[in-house]
Structure formats: C-alpha cells, structure tokens
Length: 230
Image (cartoon, rainbow, N blue to C red; front, side, top):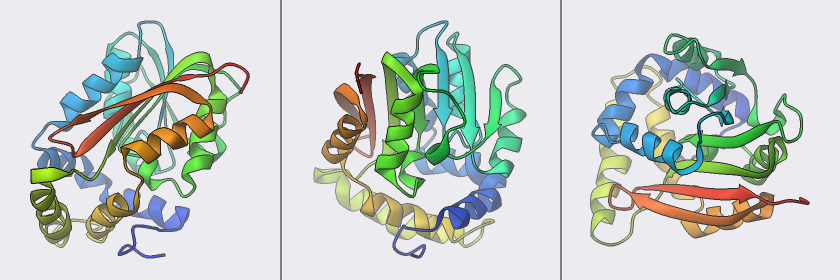
C-alpha cells in the first residue's frame, strides 16, 4: 500500500486528511473550477426531500451535509478525520457532526431516510463493506446518493490525465500534506468505473441504481433505493 497505488491503510488516510484539511476546500474549488458546488447541489436534488433524516458519510469539511440541511433535511455529517470535522463545524450548527468510521457506523438499522457520500467512498478501505453499512442504516425505500470522481472516456481523457496525473501532484508539492495529491489521481485510477460502482451498490442492497455524468464525464452521481428485505 502506498500513495502511488492509491491504496493506504485507514489510519494513514485519516492522517492524510487531517494534514490537508487547511487547503481542502480551496483545492476542491481549484481542481473542479468551482463546479463541485453545483455537483453537490445536484446530489441533494436527486435524493433528498424536506424533512428527511440524512446521513452524509465521509463528510469531510461538510459542504454536502450543509447543502442537504439547506434543502430542509435533518442531517448528520460523519467523518473519521477530526481536523476535517473541525472545519465542518464552523459551517453549520444545524448539522449534527459525528466523528466515526463508515465501516462501523454508530447508528441503528434503518435510522436514516437517505445516505449521501460526496468524493469520499473512494477512500474507504473496503468498498463493499462501506456500502453495506450505508445500506444497513437506510430504511427500506430510502435512498442513496454517491458523488465521485471517475475516469472520463473520449476526447476529455488525455486532458483529464494531464490535469490529475501531472498538474495536481505538482500543486501538492507546495501545499500541506502534498503526498495526498499523488494519492488522489492514483485512487481514481484504481476505483471502479460507473458500471462497476452501480453493481457494488446493488450488491449492498440498493435497487433501481442509475448514474449521471458531469463535467464531461469526470464525475459520476449514482442514485438508488434501499430494497426491502435486505
């Protein structure tokens, strides 16, 4: 396991995100030309309804959780990086912020109407186990929304590779926790594509899984419904 392979032990991932927390929001804006905010709003619009109880897992600095709260949901934001959560808490007092691991969620079965993950499920050490935990805490008939970077096809692919494989690691050399920006493109390369992620969501107990691509195919939004009897 190493940053170059895009696979790290959970404790190393936690420390990495603690280190980059001061520049995390800035780098999100830079790497996506500010479009990450629009994609988070699209995620909320796809799966969140006013009054829903929502778990935003791997919430980072809280942007997706805050968007869900603005949409009228009752939101719990969970992350295992204390430094990321410290920044999330500054953004909203309406969200309940919880330090915890998506592989061992501290919630009862069916406790939520919706689970969301924004740019975080890629960092979970065991994808299937993490998705199964999300399914466990979502009630039958509830919904899941998963927003994640993916590998574009066609004309954008060479530009994407230049940006993520060359320029982003260079930016990381002048920022706190610079190794994270070598890990980032490597983690995207080894992460399942949209079809395989949809299959993983179905294995976890979500049905009617669909996905949309944004940004010319660099980001995928998956949505599904928690099946009964799983």
